[in-house]
Image (cartoon, rainbow, N blue to C red; front, side):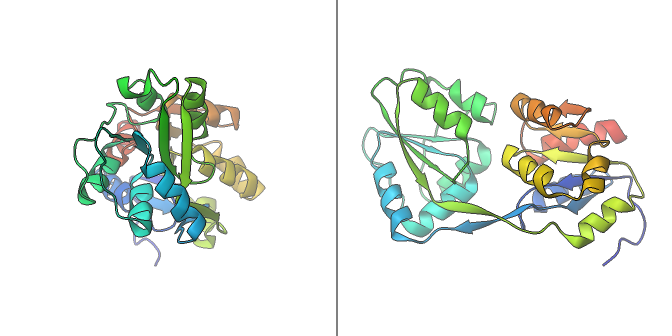
Length: 252
């Protein structure tokens, strides 16, 4: 369905198919609308290999979940239960909420909800000889995984879901070709940005590089600049409300 009238501005979302709701709600509160430009979709794994990897990760003394989707995928594979003396860590408040829904309490979570914030947690400082179960997706949180190993940790990785590339929406591409209001790109995933740069039509990518970007972290800010996006603002954090707040200030 076409928009009846142009909004004050648009947020361009690279979140997976079906994962735009929180950004859409946040934008609507500030007079914005959303263009869903998903470069991938999320698929929960159900194979024995993933289940066995998760079982090994869940036996580690420290457990780290990198997203609410990781929690949802894990609970679909195996019941979650805290063992004595285990430390459970979540990347952000959404992941904490998902773990609590699964029955896990007493979860460590950084104030800055990204890989850099996680690495500042005391539980992830002295890791020599410590086993950490990392519950995530393939190609997810590579910076975090490498940093944990550099600190001496043995990382037991469980990839419990996958991101599968999908064709960019024809409707979204058409909307970008005929923008009737200012727009900004919300960036919370380096992998999504790579998919976009690798697969977007040349004229669309050229146009997107002219739009401002709001990045969820300094690392993503630099990735966007390296990818040819000249105007990249840093949001206060990765939450939808934080990304949209930065855009709303700009377009107000």
